[in-house]
Length: 366
Ligand code: F6R
Ligand code: MG
Ligand code: MG
Image 1 (cartoon, rainbow, N blue to C red):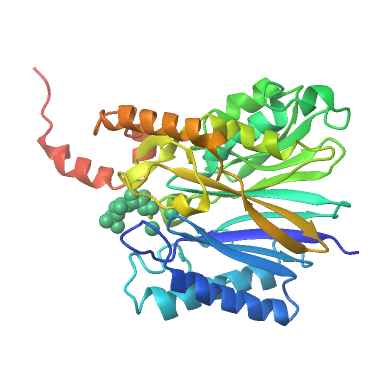
Image 2 (image 1 turned 90 degrees about the vertical axis):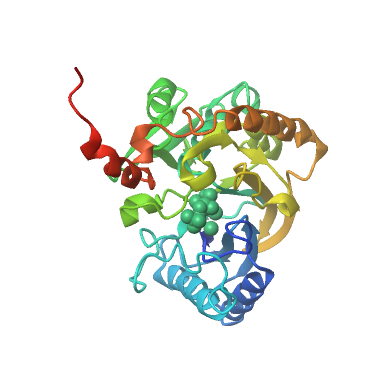
């Protein structure tokens, strides 16, 4: 049997009530279009869902990663939903993430976010798909490190011989377009030295030491593509689990702590990443707080069984409560750092235009 590829491609192409959530008619049309692609044999299976104002296309197929047909299909779906739903309904920021004029072979670098993982299906293959709103790709650095390198999170790293030798992390420098592979546990401190700067260094892929693909995350930063502020990148991530990989519970465990991420309100503020079920995957307070959903699937011959809405559980109530408390503390800072991002990151927001106006009023201090 040929390898299967799971592709999760997402874009904000307009939303309901400002940047709140995807419109049901956008989901309906995307499902119809992907259904035609499945019936025509291009896709094996698919699911369409949303995290906040981002439309998520989860697809399985046999074309491998970076397939022009699959990327082209996603691009066309985003285009058609923009033209036939977002624009006629005057949804907010219609077509926002479609930064390129026309599709040119690979959707990476054109606006939408992409996470793809090609692998040989095991006898039983559970995957967890994560999607976040009001944050950036570096938001996965903390949980991915915890899942695949921290024995205080993942008991299997200590107990299970098939995980015991550790994992390899591919880290992308989003400013330079360079990547480096680091092995854990041996190079854990080097890895942390990089990924502790999540605005620049982003984990893109994780492999088990024997080469088994374990995780893939989206890395696009819209502002770096467009050279200006165009909303946040709202990343996605695919993680395989169980039987020689972290258990589903180990994959979810880092989210019991709502770590602080960049991207809240105007892409310009830090906030806690709140784990929520699908029904709460929509941003409200101060356009947030940033939130994350986790959908579990079993894959068989490329067919997706599921989803299981994994954060729809009282076990994450405490994380949600802590996230609300942290959100409240940060909000009280108003326009002050560390709620507002630091000057480096604010360069990619609308703040420089405001500062420009004051430039000529500065006089030499006495
Ligand atoms: C969008 C986002 C929002 C917007 C904010 C202002 O993903 O994070 O917080 O940045 O609502 O949007 P505009 O400038 O379109 O009014
Ligand atoms: Mg939006
Ligand atoms: Mg969004």
